[in-house]
Every structure is written in C-alpha cells, then in structure tokens.
Amino acid sequence: MLLDELAARLPSTAAAKFAVGYFFLSGLEPLRDTLYNLQELRLLIGTTTSRETIEQISEGYRRLAPVRDIVEAQQFPKRAAIKAQVVASVADVRAATENMDQTDADEQLVSALVQMIAEGRLKVRVYTKGRLHAKAYIFDHAQAYDATGRALPRTEPGVAIIGSSNFTLSGISHNTELNVVVHGRENHARLSEWFEALWADGEPFDAALMAELRQSWALAQPTPYDIYMKTLYTLVRERLEDAEQTAFLWNDDIVSRLAEFQRVAVRQAV
Image (cartoon, rainbow, N blue to C red; front, top):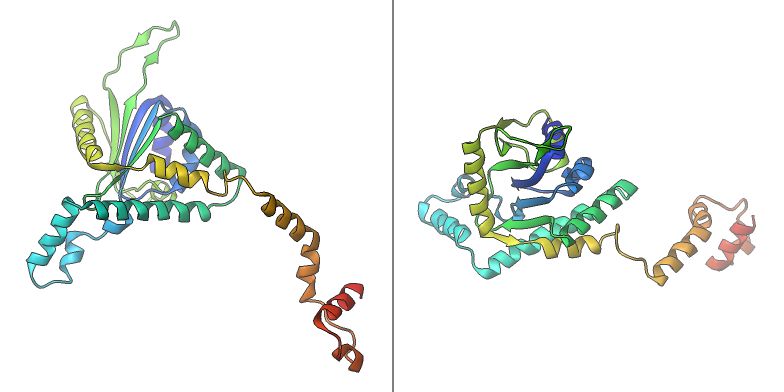
C-alpha cells in the first residue's frame, strides 16, 4: 500500500512535493507526525470543477469544435473561472472538516496543518488549467550522518512514487491502487522539473486553507452563547430524550383539558 511506503520514506525526507488530483484531510491523518517533521511540503491539487476529461466531454458532442473550445478554456482560464475553482476547493475543505470525526487526533491534525502553513512549511496550490491527471509523490532526501556526525554521501538526491493513488485515506490505503517507486538522479530531476512547471501555473491556496481550518470545529473558539446553550442542553437532555417516550398512565377529562406545558409538568412529576 502507498500508505506504508509514505510512512517509510517521509522520516528520511527533507522536502516533499505531491501532485494529486484529489486531496482530502483524511490522507494526512495517518501521516501526521512524519509530515510535521518535514522542512517543507508542497501540495499541488486538482479542482472539483475540472474533473471531466476530454473524452468524457466529447461523448456529449458530435463535432470536435465545442470540445476544443472547452479544452482551450481549461488551458487558458479567465480570472473569474480561476476564482470559481478556488471557491469550489474551499467548499471541499469545509465539507471535509465538517465530516471529520471530532477526536483529539483530528484536532491535533488541523492544528498542526495551520501551524505548518503559518511557518511557511506547508504550501498548497490549486491547478486550474484542466484536470490534474498524474499522481506524483516526490521526495528530496535529508542529509544522513554516521555515528560520528560526519555527513554521508547520497547515491541519489531523492526518489519518487508515480501511480494512481490520490492523497486520500482510501487512495493511500487500498490494494487496488497501482504505484511504482522511481529511482535515479535523472528521473528525480525530470520529475521535479515537471512538478515545478505545474506549480508555477497553480493558484495559491495557503491562505484560504488556513482560514477555513481556523474556522472549523477543531480551532474555532466557542462563544459565550455556545457555552450557554451547551450547558442548558446538558442540564435538560434527559428530559428532552424522555419526553417523547413517557406516556400518561391515564387519560381522563382533566388531562385532556391541560395545556401542553401542563402536560409536560405532569409527565416530569410522574
């Protein structure tokens, strides 16, 4: 599984560059500790508004011209289209954080991501010029030392993993994905050049991501009203839960003439 490979390589990595079609916070959770120790992590992610391939688009047309127009619009998007794709990515992050399990581990993950962004160690961009098909995980090796503290030479500057896995929990943990480790100086250099070219075309997403994470349940500070409502609910929760389950043991003319709040009082007294 890709998860095992990532977990094995990240501890000896100084900087990492990931280009993926889809990105969800679930992909970061099992790697939280090793990711936090990186000097730099750059994520280039695709957008939800450009997921259709040229082949999928062409199925709806009998002429090639409309397809070319759509492809050209993706390759040279207008500013409004770029903004719309960034907004869609923000919505994805919001939905992902709302659906996260509200556990201590997930809270620590969100906090760590915000800190990495603030420190400039986590950089995220959205690729807006069409669909980002390729999935590449590029690792730059950290300097290694022997027992005496002397720097050890590296046979290669880093490695890469190329394949089908997106940076999601299912993508990195399922055996149905196919990925291969790529070695060699020249391969590492060419893959890094490929990444840098796409990175240059990406739209910065750091600030938007950090703002959304700070507003999430994990980091947002509760207001006095939130605390009041939570306290009030805790005090009356059992009554609310039991109210629908509790029935009158009798139903005579007197009970039938009671107002609803009087009925509630009788149920509580019983």
